[in-house]
Length: 255
Image 1: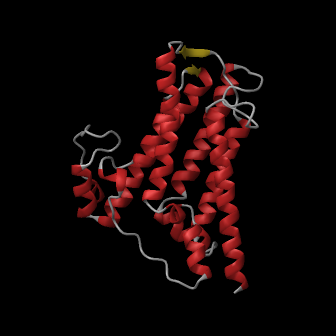
Image 2: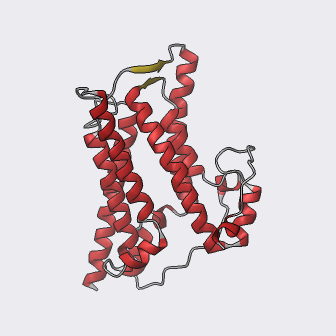
């Protein structure tokens, strides 16, 4: 019983670390210097080459961690060392640490690329920033927020319940786009009235990571759910409602 209690407390701690890092990310990208330890444009600017090298390295580290640890082959190996009930919480913890490294060690490049001065356009972008985060938040609840961040797994372990296998569903926004969570991130990353070089580096790097991550996620979904997921891909666009692009079948690629 003590192991189960420790696992549950561990899951809660991992979730709280994630939640704090996620709030920091919002403040970081919104450049709310009064409320965050660092922001995308705060601090003394260094040389362009050194700053780019550090920033791109931080994004690459986050992308590698996020992608590799999400793969089934890694999970099968990883759970030889990490108990299965806390595997998801551990993934969330490592992802949060990788994000915190970006937020803490980010090198500012404050030179402006664009600045929207028109009041109406600036308001549209500001509201777009918050709309993106709202879409992210709502999307996590549509696919089971607590399961996504490991709390459901440790709660079931504490209560001695079996973890239900994943089921293919199309809840809420997922009826209109396959990746509303990632769409929310994209909207939030790019809806900025004053865009600096540093912010563009962050947004471009994370956008590339999203595109790569979604590719591998969809391969895994096609492998797991077969024709159900292939039919879903044919009906529902990847990111933008109404924008359907012909895509090759992952089933053929995986044969």
